[in-house]
Amino acid sequence: MSFLTPQRAAIAAALLLLVTLPIWVGNPYYINVASQILFFAVFALGLNVIVGYGGLVSLGHAGLAAIAGYTAALMLAAGHGHFISDFSAILVTLAASAVFAVLSLRGTGIGFLMITLAIGQIIWGILYRWSSLTNGDNGVNVSGRPAPFGISLASADSFYYATLIVFLAAVATMAVFFRSPFGASLRGTRDQARRMTALGYNVWLIRFLAILISGFWSGVAGLLFIYYNQFISPQVATLTASAEVLLMVISGGTATLLGPIAGAAIVVIMKNVVSAYIVRWNLVLGVIFVLIITFMPEGLVPGSVRLWKLGWRSFRQRRVTVLRNVAEPPQ
Amino acid sequence: MTAQTTALAINGLCKSFDGLRVTANVNLAVAPGERRLIIGPNGAGKTTLFNLITGEITPDSGSIHLFGQDITKTPSRRRPHLGMARTYQIITLFARDTILRNVTLALLGLSELRWNPFIDIERQHHLVEQAHTALARVGLTQIADRPLSQTSYGERRRVEIAMALAQNPKVLLLDEPFAGLSIDERRDVQQLLLAIPRDVTIVMIEHNMDVALEFAESITLLHFGEVIVEGTRAEVVADPRTREVYLGH
Image (cartoon, each protein chain N blue to C red):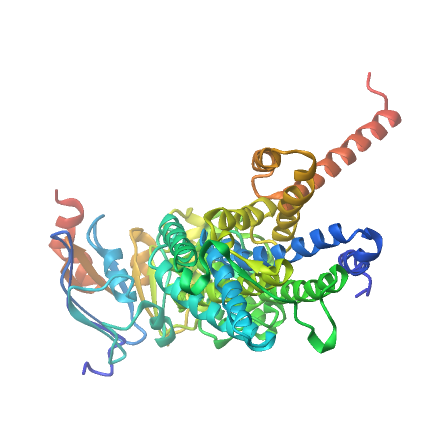
């Protein structure tokens, strides 16, 4: 087996681009945009576990990210350290994901979607109304970023690298997960739940664990979000926020590794870059989604691969025809 | 406790859907190694009986014993672990995966590996080998890596059987394994069913009398959810009630 396959070369090139990004981008504003893309990609990858591989579409995941963000922000505000705050935030998010799973797995399909939507709205309502705990609409300030191993994350560059490490960890575990027996089990419950039961699988428990995994990465994204913004408000938990992440997954391509990352890039770039030039950037985003759904209903990444193959095949066919016509000209 | 000599024992099993009795006081005793055929006209409750045996639906009353163990209240997902496997009348496979992956999923269902999120499934060589062995038994080795969506109906029927065989069941429930097959394909499937060793007990639902009768040692005739006739092949075929149910109306 050769060491340098096209796939490995592509991964190496992508890694090189990501690691050197602060150098060739330069402007801190755009480095910050890159950080946002990365932590939204972590969020979208987490949601993709259940949407793409589990066939369970959730409209309440922003609530889970918000629970992580608020837990950490409130503990930091109360004077606790970064490590204990973040660790507790992840534990609380996992517990919340477990409740989320038990309630939402009462249904599948539209039933599941509606329950997750309701849970998301309840979380938003609590954050918005329970002012004595959450400071309501005013939100909570996060006084500073952590300094792991004594390295300050205050600058755009250092925060980008910290986010990149978390992002790469997420991508690596997802890549392993999707090829694993448990990943195969999860896909099985998506395609033939009845058969899976008859083969001896515990379909409910598989889905429950998938929601925990997905909740974990949503929580990690929530933590990166509060450290990036150094602020959190109920806005984070709105239905729009949940829908945005779901759009990233669907537009990029569900059940793929690159799809949610591409989806996150499109949405974040639209929000941050295009909005500077076009006031109605939401309209542009809408048009892009309509185009994706029309021409690549399977999502941007698998759709591009399909169109590329199609184009390549027709190009080769034409070349063969031309060559044949040269050899024996048609009468 | 039911006698240890019974592979599958069903006592007084009843099930109604909105007042319609689909399984009415069914008693069934299948000996280890037996080849039992269940026949009956459409709507006789044959598939419902299978769904009750595998636990996909719960009975209103009655009991089911597998090798003497009461499994009436055992969850459906536990029953394959006790040695029960089934195939479906309507093909129920994983269309996006290859034939090999379909069979691997059947093997994984009984393995603790199925919870592992950290290893590569393709590198679990013992699983892959076992899947190839199961595919060899149904003659699909050549096309193991073909996506299921590119296979013929007859091949899918054999994948159904391979998945059940891969689990090394003690009791195998076949729901119309010949349905929709051509004459040649029926012969092939018949051959592979005949090759299943005697330590596997087989209960089969089938309409195709020509192939099924040859296979069966004993026959149970269901009609409106009730057992009408039961006995050896010769007895049931000769019984006037069989003719009445099938030809009499």
